[in-house]
Image 1 (cartoon, rainbow, N blue to C red):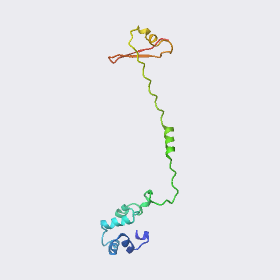
Image 2: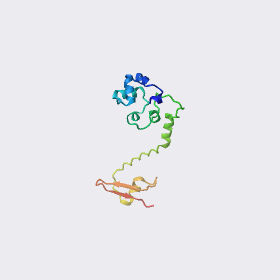
Image 3: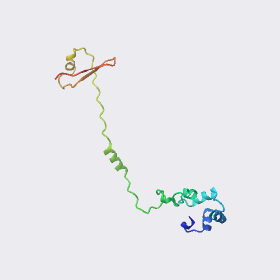
Image 4: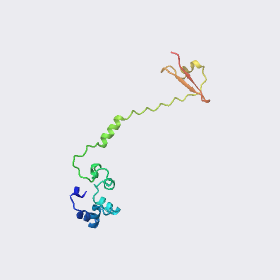
Length: 148
């Protein structure tokens, strides 16, 4: 990491706020880095991959694995994003048609008529009747199909 960043062990020690001897001991393998040493290192150099530093896995620099954040400088032009209006238009185009509300059934007065004359007596002949369904209080019903 020191070679990659082009700094000396003394510069590393000064930048993370530890004694120069601490960095030298860690580099030579005499001591293992303490939690505070690693914490300061990752705070000052946030692009270092912590998993690489602790376990030796993955890339040394995390920027290769991580998408840019708001505070990174862009080297490429920003990706075109959709405006709210475009998204709304797409939603409207893709939305399924809204179902029409069923028309309420006409309220019929109870009238006792012979079975075969019921449709004609209630509705007359202004519009042809397709079918008539009568629901009873005992949860049964009867369907009337007029003869043509």
